[in-house]
Every structure is written in structure tokens, then in C-alpha cells.
Image 1 (cartoon, rainbow, N blue to C red):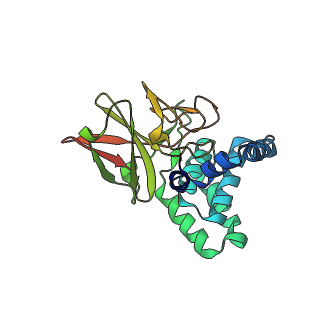
Image 2 (cartoon, rainbow, N blue to C red; image 1 turned 90 degrees about the horizontal axis):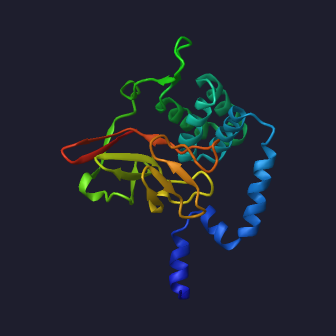
Image 3 (cartoon, rainbow, N blue to C red; image 1 turned 180 degrees about the vertical axis):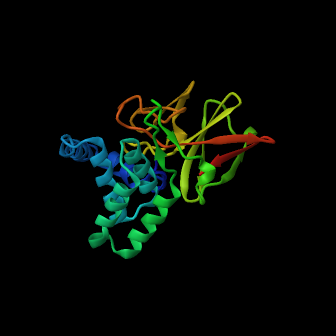
Length: 228
């Protein structure tokens, strides 16, 4: 590859991807350190800490990723709000208020103690959530991913027969682009390091403690819409 082509290829990489390519050994040690540093924390606490760091650095995509994860691990809305407020001394008021707006836009997880299965509030009950038209069905090739950017979120779409899956495009490992991944059945393999995810629920098959966010889809008149 020529120097110009290499430079252009590097420009298309996320920061994590670039570091992984140019400093692979350093990144392996860094990730091992992060994993060890949180080994004695329960998942809910780890995700609440992640929420704090995403407020400080103010990364909307990160907040939309880790707030639902904290909820799935049992964090209440008030606990997540407290985590956001704890970031105030380092984050400042603007970041905190913007993070609160993101929290308000995310469906609230609920649980009926008489029911063994958790449920969530209907997406239509969330004021900021609505259907977004994202693609035509014929644009989506079975067995291949399709990247769309909706409301600043990068989503990967996958067509499986007459069904379309929508998941967060970034792999939870090192940010690989899942839309560029290898698809077999309802499983996508990240092109960066081979992590695998189930398209139906976002469950990581490589590390069972991890998930990517999934989004409801519908098809009407050969158009694909995503609810978020």
C-alpha cells in the first residue's frame, strides 16, 4: 500500500482502531489493566462509573450505550441520575444538563415482581423517541451490513430474510465497525478482532458480560424505519 493510501486508510479509523493498529502491544497492556482494575466491582457499579466518565468527557454515544447497560444490571433511574450529578465537579454544568437530557430520552426499565421476565416502557411512551426512516429494503443485501447515521448515532443494519436487525455499529471491544463485519445467520463477527454478536438481542458471544445496543425496526412500503 502506498504512503498516500495508508494515510487515507488511517484517517478512516477511530482513535481506538488507530492505536490498536499502530501500538498493538501497548493497547493490549492498557486493556488488560482496565479489565483488572474493575475485576472486584459488580457490573452495575462498573457501568455507573462508566456513565460518570462519559459525562466528564461528554460522549453522547457512550452515554446511550452505558446508561441502558447500567439499567440492565439493576441500576435505577435515580442511581443513574446521581452518577451523572457526581460528575459535576469535573464535567461542569453544561455537560451534566446535556447528560440528563440523554437519560430522559432512554426508556425506563421496569420489573413486575410477579413476573419472571423484565419488561420496558413502550417506546412510544418516551417523548423523544420516534420512528426514523433510514433505508429502503432493497438497499440492504442479506449477509452484509449497512451503516446509517441517525440522530448522531451510527447504526449497523442487517437484513435476514424479510427481517431487519439494527444494532449499535461500534464493537464493545475496541470500537470495530460492525457494519463491515462478517455475517452468518443472525451472528455478526467484528472485522477488527473477531468478536461475535447475536443480532436478535445484541448479546456478545465472545464475552457473555457484554452486549451492543439493539433497536426496534419495522418495514412499511419497502422502507425500513428504526425506533430511537
